[in-house]
Image 1 (cartoon, rainbow, N blue to C red):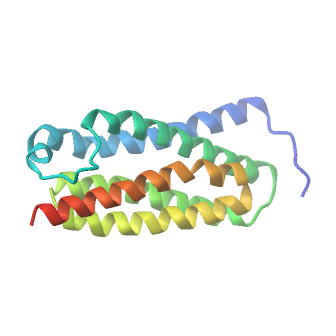
Image 2: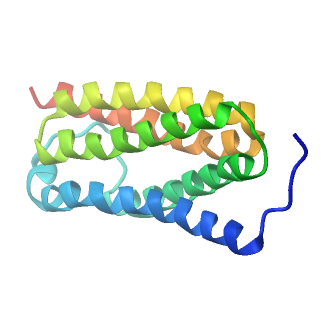
Image 3: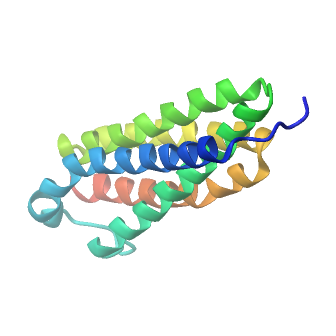
Length: 167
C-alpha cells in the first residue's frame, strides 16, 4: 500500500512514546539494579574485561534511546501501511523489553548470576528475533538494534564470568 502522510502531531507523539517506553523500562530495571551496585555487586569477583560501573548508565541510556527510535520507525510503518510483519515486530519488541527488565530483577534483584545467565540467554534470542523482523520492515530500525545485541553479548560474557568466579 502506498505511504500516506503521517500527521506531524501523531508522528511526534509516536516518537516520544516509543523512546519514553524504552527509557521507562530502564528506570524499572534500575529499581532492582541500583540498590545492589554499592552492596552486593561490588563484593563479587568480576572478569578482567568488566567495565567500570560508571559506564553502564550512559551506555544503557543510549541503547534505550536507539531502541525507542527503532520502535518508532516500525510504528511509522504500521501507521502508514498494512505491513503484516508489524504486529509480530511489536510482540517481539515488547517481549525482549520485558525480558530486559526481568534480567535486572534476576541478576540484581535476586542476586543470582545463574538466574541472570538463563534470563540473558533468552533475552539475547529475543533481541535477535526482533532484529530479524525489524529488518524486514525497516533496515534502519534493524541496524539501530545492532549496538544493543552487541552490548547484551558483552553483558552475557560478563554475567557468565561472574557466575564462574563466584560459585
